[in-house]
Length: 169
Image (cartoon, rainbow, N blue to C red; front, side, top):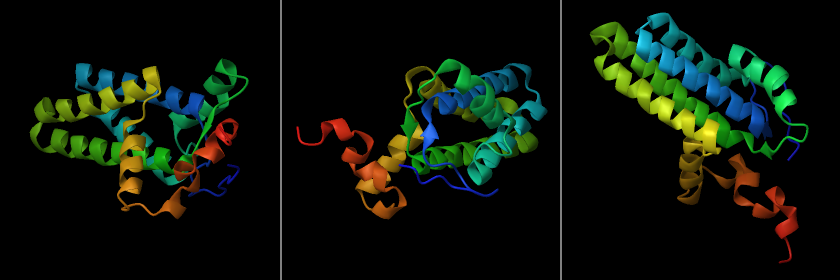
């Protein structure tokens, strides 16, 4: 799993789970602050962060940079590496949902938007606290039913690549 993507518009593969969970923690905090304060600029920061991570991984994301360069190296000396494509898909779901919430805020106010941001906050909390990536689960389901081709994420479909210790049992 050393298919390291390079370039501005790329997404890392593999992804450090500690960094991903750190980003999710930041998303939870930003979402909570935006709901409580009803400050549009905080929601804009959430939207920007998701789109930056979808398009460039951590490269143009302040939260991504903080997580990969500062937080993750201090929390774990031996990172657990995960496939990148499901994480990118999850960031894409966050980008769509947060953008939708921003459109709702700008057109009708915080009422419905707070529910959308709250749903994002719940998903990010599951990732941050339990390591459960809702977007990754959806990605796996889409692979299982054939919507996402196997070659998009070979590691996702081949357990032996992620857990070589299980081979031959």
